[in-house]
Image 1 (spheres, rainbow, N blue to C red):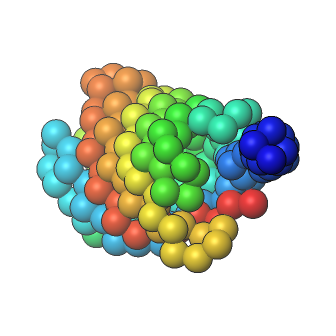
Image 2 (cartoon, rainbow, N blue to C red):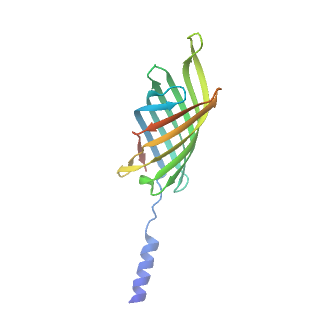
Image 3 (tube, rainbow, N blue to C red):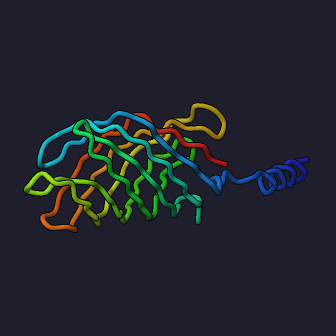
Length: 168
Protein backbone atom coordinates (compact mmCIF):
# COMPACT_ATOMS: atom_id res chain seq x y z
CA UNK A 1 0.00 0.00 0.00
CA UNK A 2 2.81 2.42 0.92
CA UNK A 3 4.67 1.64 -2.34
CA UNK A 4 1.50 2.20 -4.36
CA UNK A 5 0.92 5.59 -2.62
CA UNK A 6 4.52 6.69 -3.33
CA UNK A 7 4.28 5.58 -6.97
CA UNK A 8 0.98 7.47 -7.41
CA UNK A 9 2.43 10.59 -5.75
CA UNK A 10 5.54 10.49 -7.95
CA UNK A 11 3.45 9.99 -11.12
CA UNK A 12 1.22 12.93 -10.15
CA UNK A 13 4.17 15.26 -9.53
CA UNK A 14 5.76 14.30 -12.85
CA UNK A 15 2.49 14.93 -14.71
CA UNK A 16 1.84 18.38 -13.14
CA UNK A 17 2.32 21.19 -15.64
CA UNK A 18 5.05 23.67 -14.83
CA UNK A 19 4.12 27.32 -14.56
CA UNK A 20 5.79 28.78 -17.63
CA UNK A 21 5.80 32.41 -18.58
CA UNK A 22 3.44 33.34 -21.40
CA UNK A 23 5.13 33.55 -24.78
CA UNK A 24 3.66 36.92 -25.81
CA UNK A 25 2.99 40.14 -23.93
CA UNK A 26 1.46 43.33 -25.28
CA UNK A 27 1.64 46.26 -22.93
CA UNK A 28 0.64 49.85 -23.22
CA UNK A 29 -0.23 53.01 -21.45
CA UNK A 30 -2.11 56.13 -22.27
CA UNK A 31 -1.46 58.52 -19.47
CA UNK A 32 -0.49 61.82 -18.06
CA UNK A 33 2.88 61.55 -16.37
CA UNK A 34 5.30 63.90 -14.75
CA UNK A 35 8.80 64.00 -16.22
CA UNK A 36 11.50 65.00 -13.81
CA UNK A 37 14.41 66.16 -15.92
CA UNK A 38 17.49 68.27 -15.28
CA UNK A 39 16.30 71.23 -17.37
CA UNK A 40 12.81 71.69 -16.00
CA UNK A 41 10.20 69.28 -14.68
CA UNK A 42 7.12 69.12 -16.89
CA UNK A 43 3.88 67.29 -17.46
CA UNK A 44 3.74 65.04 -20.51
CA UNK A 45 0.80 63.39 -22.17
CA UNK A 46 1.61 60.20 -23.94
CA UNK A 47 0.83 56.77 -25.24
CA UNK A 48 3.11 53.77 -25.50
CA UNK A 49 2.56 50.37 -27.08
CA UNK A 50 5.03 47.52 -26.64
CA UNK A 51 5.49 43.87 -27.48
CA UNK A 52 7.70 41.38 -25.62
CA UNK A 53 8.55 37.78 -26.54
CA UNK A 54 9.59 35.34 -23.79
CA UNK A 55 12.92 33.62 -24.37
CA UNK A 56 12.61 31.80 -21.02
CA UNK A 57 10.50 31.99 -17.84
CA UNK A 58 12.52 35.02 -16.69
CA UNK A 59 13.84 36.70 -19.85
CA UNK A 60 11.92 38.63 -22.51
CA UNK A 61 13.08 40.61 -25.53
CA UNK A 62 10.92 43.28 -27.08
CA UNK A 63 10.33 46.74 -28.35
CA UNK A 64 7.99 49.68 -27.94
CA UNK A 65 6.74 52.73 -29.82
CA UNK A 66 5.68 55.86 -27.97
CA UNK A 67 4.26 59.29 -28.71
CA UNK A 68 4.47 62.09 -26.14
CA UNK A 69 3.35 65.69 -26.08
CA UNK A 70 4.40 68.18 -23.44
CA UNK A 71 2.47 71.18 -22.13
CA UNK A 72 4.31 73.50 -24.54
CA UNK A 73 3.02 71.46 -27.48
CA UNK A 74 6.26 69.72 -28.44
CA UNK A 75 5.62 66.25 -29.89
CA UNK A 76 8.11 63.40 -29.88
CA UNK A 77 8.08 59.83 -31.16
CA UNK A 78 10.39 57.12 -29.85
CA UNK A 79 11.32 53.53 -30.63
CA UNK A 80 12.99 51.33 -28.02
CA UNK A 81 14.30 47.77 -27.99
CA UNK A 82 15.86 45.59 -25.31
CA UNK A 83 15.53 42.82 -22.73
CA UNK A 84 13.34 42.55 -19.63
CA UNK A 85 14.11 40.29 -16.67
CA UNK A 86 11.16 39.00 -14.58
CA UNK A 87 11.42 37.91 -10.96
CA UNK A 88 8.61 35.68 -9.69
CA UNK A 89 5.43 34.24 -11.20
CA UNK A 90 4.84 36.18 -14.43
CA UNK A 91 1.42 37.78 -13.82
CA UNK A 92 2.65 39.10 -10.44
CA UNK A 93 6.37 39.48 -11.26
CA UNK A 94 8.75 42.26 -10.42
CA UNK A 95 10.54 43.28 -13.63
CA UNK A 96 13.65 45.18 -14.65
CA UNK A 97 14.40 46.19 -18.23
CA UNK A 98 17.03 48.05 -20.21
CA UNK A 99 16.37 49.50 -23.66
CA UNK A 100 18.19 51.31 -26.44
CA UNK A 101 16.09 54.29 -27.59
CA UNK A 102 15.85 56.38 -30.74
CA UNK A 103 13.73 59.53 -30.38
CA UNK A 104 12.65 62.16 -32.88
CA UNK A 105 11.20 65.42 -31.64
CA UNK A 106 10.70 69.05 -32.59
CA UNK A 107 12.56 71.79 -30.76
CA UNK A 108 13.25 75.49 -31.17
CA UNK A 109 16.64 76.88 -32.20
CA UNK A 110 18.17 80.12 -30.85
CA UNK A 111 16.09 82.17 -33.33
CA UNK A 112 12.81 80.51 -32.36
CA UNK A 113 12.57 78.45 -35.56
CA UNK A 114 11.37 74.88 -35.27
CA UNK A 115 14.02 72.19 -35.90
CA UNK A 116 13.98 68.40 -35.98
CA UNK A 117 16.12 66.70 -33.32
CA UNK A 118 17.20 63.06 -33.43
CA UNK A 119 18.28 61.61 -30.07
CA UNK A 120 19.88 58.31 -29.04
CA UNK A 121 19.86 56.99 -25.52
CA UNK A 122 18.99 54.18 -23.17
CA UNK A 123 16.63 53.59 -20.29
CA UNK A 124 16.34 51.37 -17.26
CA UNK A 125 12.86 50.46 -16.02
CA UNK A 126 11.66 48.73 -12.86
CA UNK A 127 8.15 47.84 -11.81
CA UNK A 128 5.71 45.18 -10.77
CA UNK A 129 2.84 43.40 -12.48
CA UNK A 130 -0.35 43.03 -10.46
CA UNK A 131 -2.85 40.57 -11.92
CA UNK A 132 -6.29 42.06 -12.61
CA UNK A 133 -7.76 39.05 -14.46
CA UNK A 134 -6.41 35.95 -16.12
CA UNK A 135 -3.94 37.16 -18.76
CA UNK A 136 -4.28 40.84 -17.79
CA UNK A 137 -2.00 42.71 -15.38
CA UNK A 138 -1.65 46.27 -14.14
CA UNK A 139 2.02 47.14 -14.75
CA UNK A 140 3.13 50.37 -13.02
CA UNK A 141 6.82 51.25 -13.34
CA UNK A 142 9.48 53.91 -13.01
CA UNK A 143 12.07 54.61 -15.69
CA UNK A 144 15.36 56.46 -15.82
CA UNK A 145 16.29 57.58 -19.35
CA UNK A 146 19.60 59.06 -20.48
CA UNK A 147 19.93 60.64 -23.93
CA UNK A 148 23.57 61.03 -24.96
CA UNK A 149 23.14 62.19 -28.55
CA UNK A 150 22.91 65.09 -29.40
CA UNK A 151 25.26 66.73 -26.91
CA UNK A 152 24.86 67.80 -24.17
CA UNK A 153 23.31 64.70 -22.67
CA UNK A 154 19.91 64.91 -20.99
CA UNK A 155 18.23 62.63 -18.50
CA UNK A 156 14.61 62.02 -17.59
CA UNK A 157 12.97 60.22 -14.67
CA UNK A 158 9.44 58.95 -15.42
CA UNK A 159 6.81 57.67 -13.02
CA UNK A 160 4.19 55.71 -15.00
CA UNK A 161 1.32 54.61 -12.73
CA UNK A 162 -1.15 53.56 -15.45
CA UNK A 163 0.10 50.75 -17.66
CA UNK A 164 -1.66 47.53 -18.65
CA UNK A 165 -0.31 44.22 -19.92
CA UNK A 166 -2.09 41.46 -21.82
CA UNK A 167 -0.17 38.18 -21.93
CA UNK A 168 -0.77 34.73 -23.38
